[in-house]
Length: 328
Image 1 (spheres, rainbow, N blue to C red):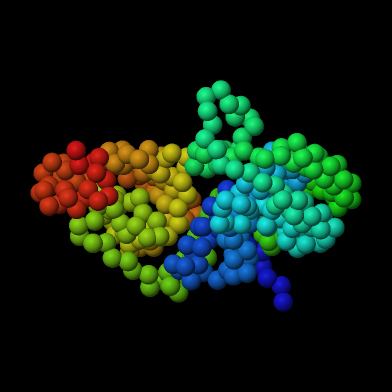
Image 2 (image 1 turned 90 degrees about the vertical axis):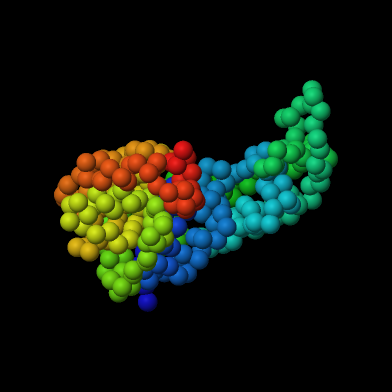
């Protein structure tokens, strides 16, 4: 029985951070709305650094420098999370590169023989001789010359093995597609596909989170930059907001938000600064297929929603849980 590929953005097939973002969005569709996805594929991709390690194993970095190796061994010894040393050999075996996996396992055994100590560098010390950690500290290797020679010898001996396996890959995106059963599409197609999958589920039709009377933003799960002002603006155009079910950030701006209303789903796009609560408008509203419908503007909102000074102290305290700077 074949399993349909998991739809991700094409940019995610060549960047682990992008891929993790896609998987997080897909997990929302699965967890909140019951969208059926390949559980095995999601479990693999959600594993710690699995995406990053796969890109490493296939790409130009698959022949690590001594400095790369120093970072690997330090991570392996000081972190509870699996690192490149632990994950990459299994990826090579999954891809059918058993000889490369053997080579990496031997390389990992060598790296684990390296000894080092945490130090506090003094003024004038050569920081190039030290390896920084994620907490501002530094580590000193005990026998750097032997380490660098061992890395160089292994890299030299490994070159022919990697070339014989066709690595580094000339098409990491294609290898990732095969490894994890992924299909890359444009960002727009990605959003359209998953929004459709969500809206077709029985759970979408019955999903009804509450918006408490004292909450300024909400419902905030699974997505929620929409405020009471947006709700009032939508009501001015004849729509009652229910919940948000998909989101695409746009740099530092709020970006797109897919929402359900009493008259069906809409897509909102807000190009204002995501950190500001004073710049809520304009917001462009369209149908799910992208057809423009209308804009939400400041004129759609009652003045009292912009005059927070008229709120009682108790209400201000409740609002401050969400946007303290807005209440000054």
